[in-house]
Length: 638
Image 1 (spheres, rainbow, N blue to C red):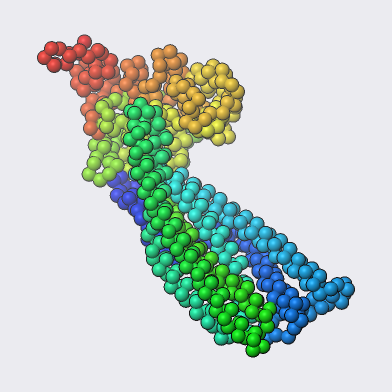
Image 2 (image 1 turned 135 degrees about the vertical axis):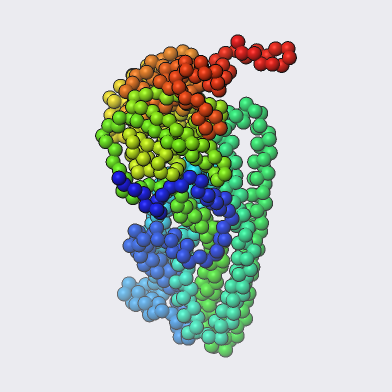
């Protein structure tokens, strides 16, 4: 007999602080561990990123040489007629002279041809760099979304009982998009720092004094950036949380639109959404104000730097210490010196958002809540007999709030058990445990005398067919909604299943029959048609255990005549658990289990429980007989 290791031993009532999943995170601006995890998704595309790096080097160097051609070649060599200067020309004057001699061109034409080639080269390499940079980023984030989606799909029902779907959607959409903006910005920033280093080298070789004065402005930018970070750190995190709240409220209202309209809550919901939206707007304006002020401050520093160059450069020209082209080149290089710093400051804005988004994404990826699986799961036979046993089952979704209290019942192979009881008595919880959607201690639920905790949840669910009152329809064709991508369910098998449960006729009346595309949640089908489709889906999968949770509660009388015939065929030879209020469904069960406040109150056949004159009879009479209230307010059952 296989056992579960102590670390895998499931326990119900395990407390997890799900509020932490939606808590405000620290949002460390430069969390290098987090940044390393984000970049790790780029590893499969590192060759393309390396090529992108080479391209940006070529594009950046071409941009630097273009400035040299304008200042040293055009101004000093051609206009002023002085090729001698302490300012380096990177060999461009000599190269221009060679072009003049080789092609017999005037100096201006030769310089223009060189400038045009450099401009074209810079543009082509820059465009190619952006393409090779964006490709890996988009592919990496696609992989991240895929991994995040797969991880979220494997989280248990207990996770989704406590975490709003809107918050999860924000992490897969908005937060991943924030990472895209960050990675793209980092790639662009690399292209700005290459000219920065080249320009700094040339400026130092020309005038250490003037370069040092200009470099004094860089710490000022750094200090401004530091205070800007402090001011915006909390703002950007609150902006992300407000967007998440907007998504959650929108999702809740759109998914429950019928209830909203029936209860005339449109104005009230609009007012609440307006409040959340206004809060988001206020936070966005605060972030915009700070960003605008920061940008204006950096622009003013550039103007100060330009004034310094003109002041010192004019004196140097007069004293023949620097050429006019050299001064112009210094002004052009000054832009290259400050542009990366300004861009870095702007990129910090994106970085703040991305760090918070990255924390949220990896918090979701690291959320390890899951159904405990056995280390060495037992294998089920190719066809189960179908015996189900609940043995003294205790369960609570949260600690100190028990839902099931010692429920015991045995369902023999092929039997039909009806479970009835007031709302909240634990009926649906019992079948959720049978489907292994929650952890529970070993020795409580058995399938063909095998402890469910010794079986992998995947194997258990393949043997159980569940039809819920709220049947979920996926976007896709009718055939896809029957087969659910199961390769073993052929088109012929799906059609045969539909015929058995009397769904074939209405499907054939659809525009494209089994290839008809269904919209979200099957809105283009009636409730009865969706229920018939649900039975076709279960029958096509051919499970040994059948669970009907209020499966016919919303079916009209005409449709029920069709479905009852299909149900008999569906339940034939299968162990069936029926959670139903309808008299006909209950009467066809072999036994009836009556639950009340999580405990077994009565058990027996329909007739036995009626004769017992207990809770079942009261529930039965309230459901199936007319209720009359006399003049004294006493209830009389007719």
